[in-house]
Image (cartoon, rainbow, N blue to C red):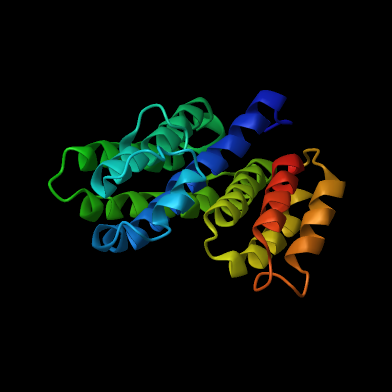
Length: 227
């Protein structure tokens, strides 16, 4: 396979980002939903508002349904997986039919969960399909650059979400290391100065225990500049 076009590079990067956005947001929701039903005073709502969900909706059930199934909010798991599917269809010849199929099955499972009596239980299968997709990339994405672009998209999205949600901040160092080992294997340009500044912040002795909200905002700006 020859060099990837700029359009395909962009689609591969966003395929990884949208798949990871769905996965990490869903994982966060599954871990906070029960606590939210027990108390509306927790920080679950404030954290998800960082992703753009309705701050005026005080009903935990309705709020989470929006987070899960909204067709218009770009951070909902439905929107994210639908966007991932749109990219996977166009990239089928690059990522392989098997990998694209896992994305389609994850989207099908989200649609099924929307009408289910036990949606959070059914959504566990979405996690399974996403994990299968991640594994299939190693087996079926032959182009080394394409495979690494997808994985870089996953890492940069995970870093963004962890910082926004104040979630698994300790894992940002691991994700930064993953990105560092892959980004130069993609063959695509990126903002090296922004990435170096991000690395310096993530590996600061103060991080994550003493990081401030303002510093997390600065890190988000750097993450946005990398690609």
